[in-house]
Length: 386
Length: 85
Image 1: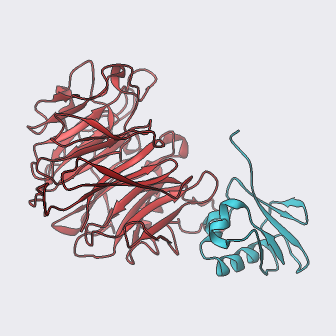
Image 2 (image 1 turned 90 degrees about the vertical axis):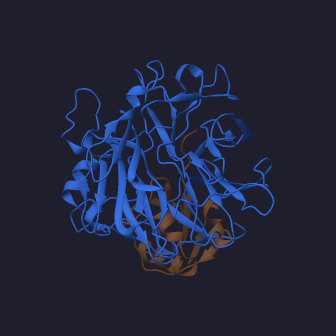
Image 3 (image 1 turned 45 degrees about the horizontal axis):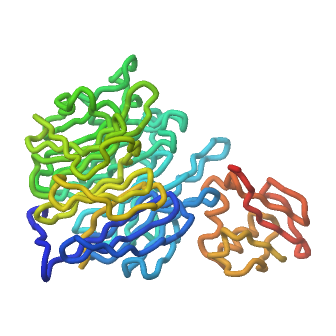
């Protein structure tokens, strides 16, 4: 895994960019050179789609995490790249509370991760409020993880709805070690980073070295707010993290995160939501900083958006903004809304809160918009079709 | 009994008026879900609470309790409450 590279040109694999938005889902089909794009959609117009993910094990199956402003959450599935959809028989839902107790209800499924390559048809889901779920039948029925959802300690770390993001607290960044299907990570906003080595039966926090908002105690897991975790495909012992309080890297079995964002320019800072890793080079990662000062505008710093890349595992960072607006661009890119394909050179994609989809064919040196006037973009996934 | 379906749920029923049975609203929802799989969870959460913007009217009168008893001659209207301006 991870060492394959995709050449773009004749007979190459095609990339599809899966775009989840506040008003539906869109699929952009690229040509062989990733230079022309055909937009397919909207799928589920009016539905809030938090994540749209292709199953890499078959290259055809799509899962979409959906809800509307009024109706409850659900998961839709397609086995033919969106030509037809079916709804999950049993979407992610918390266990029914005992009599006299107040139970939680899933507001929306926020994150979808295919399970290990050796587990075809199996998926993980993270929800808001924070919950972890698994399906073993291609996303048709989902079962909760009591070890997370109903565990008293976890519930304390999750806090209340008031402790979450403006759009609700999230369980996100579910990561499966490609060497071991039982080795899992996830992040909670808020509630820290957690690791399991037994397939989710038990968990332990992995927050050492991570900072929290000034005045709070970093020893309290509840105060940790990882925004996005990524594992390097060619070195699964290395994880990167964009946090509410900086950019981090960890090299397992070390259990301490190191704040690599300190090397970012002072005027830009190292706050953001999203982070992407190179499919073949574990020293290369990209971030898209935002303004996290004072009241947290959550916009491009100074109205001048830019991607930053490190090619040395966080020792240094370089600004990549060729083609992007030079001023008065106040958008944000959410935690799921940036992705990389496996091309050589790597293609990068991000979607903005103002409904623009941008791409770079050369690992970030030059950027251009490939779709405009979409609804607010929640998630972007570059997927390789078969 | 007759059940009127709001437009956001027509993807399940295809028609605005359906028939379902049940001795109370809770049972009625079970029968609706049997006929139109998935519809119940869009209306009621896993703790059997009516979702925030969903409302039931029985014979024109708003009811909030899913244990509200029904008879075969009742007319039930499921409404998506307006909100957000």
